[in-house]
Image 1 (tube, rainbow, N blue to C red):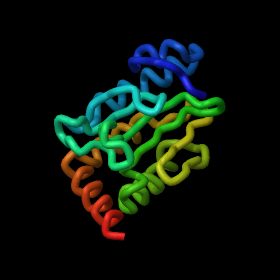
Image 2 (tube, one colour; image 1 turned 30 degrees about the horizontal axis):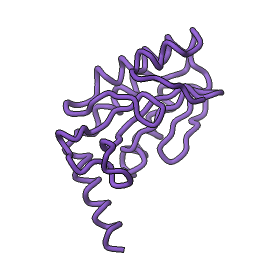
Image 3 (cartoon, rainbow, N blue to C red; image 1 turned 180 degrees about the vertical axis):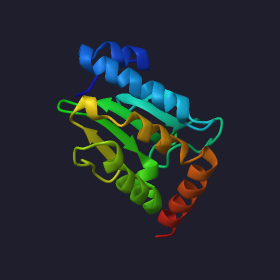
Image 4 (tube, rainbow, N blue to C red; image 1 turned 90 degrees about the vertical axis):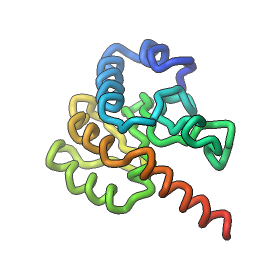
Length: 155
């Protein structure tokens, strides 16, 4: 579902009550564990965590006016979603996450390339998400991003 909001607080205030609590806890978990340099914003109709232009002036290659996206959370119709570019871009972090997930949650992992879907709100593994947040620094993410964009431009 798409919510029109100008701030993370505005986004969360529009959600059903049970989703508000889970999204606020997820937001607090992310903010408390993301390495320094990432910035919280509203991006693409979701609560986003980005590398701001003050750190990476080039912005997102698909739209340089936008800061470089890293992570987002959203309340969708049937689930809460966590989008994480580090999982998408790092086979080692993906493998780590897939191995760790069953140690924290009894339900099967439901994910796409970089999207993790939580259909049961009570099963969101906040501790695991906190650990995932600490896995990639802004510097590490930028190195990988610049390398991958460079490969794309050579094609």
